[in-house]
Image: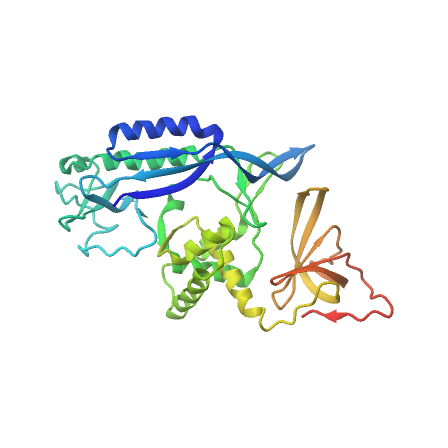
Length: 385
């Protein structure tokens, strides 16, 4: 059965991508692709005005792409290893090799017996049930050397994705969409273990700290993403695996109405993910934790006057429809987040204390009006924990 993958690319990359696809199609029987007419999607762009780094949301033209990746002579690619890193063809299923010796540490080609120092491929014949791990050179002996061309196509696709610094909007938290720079970031790891790492970071800071551009134009990766990757480990406890399964079960039942929510739902169903996949599991953990906590927290109503004490954890510059402003996020001990657009006052320890009124409530996030130091006479305030 052929593999079908769908994604989108910037309109300006359409010609170069079409050229690559046409080259592969000439060499790989059954390979095909379709590219739609350009449509408009909202992206966050970085600009620098008078030395000040800003972000604005703008429409860009992108093309939807569908690619059919064929099996070759009844052989199907299960996984491959390159420079010691592990990659899978289908992340949704657990890979269990028929030959228990096959894998990362299997260094000998099943065909010629020579060492596979650079890369090797684990392939499966859907008719005979035969499984082999072979080097790139021996692909030709099995009539499946075109798999190398398919692998080259993926590499070219990754290069095309490096397309000028677009960042896709993910429900208010932005991550670069085309950032294929380090092959290690695309190695396959267990999705359960990534959820465990995301939970460890969530317990420290329940807000995603975005990556940012400096005034010299360089990009600094998200601190949250870096921290999750540092927490990642293949050594997890039974309780941690049980927690990950609960999060995935929750994610599989998400009412996915946005593209990001659909990605969360897919992640919850996949067995593997990439090492770079940190944003989705973090927000999956966040959504799960909030669904549990919100049942025990007495949230205020819109228009209600409240009193709170919390810690300022982030301040982001936002370019809105009516101009630019700063949005501050204050974390309460209960895990509730207070967001205030405009100015606030925090002490030397980033503690914010004050009185305000509720403008809106979304999950465990409360958007508030101007924060004042002293209460107004004759007004009753609800104290937020």
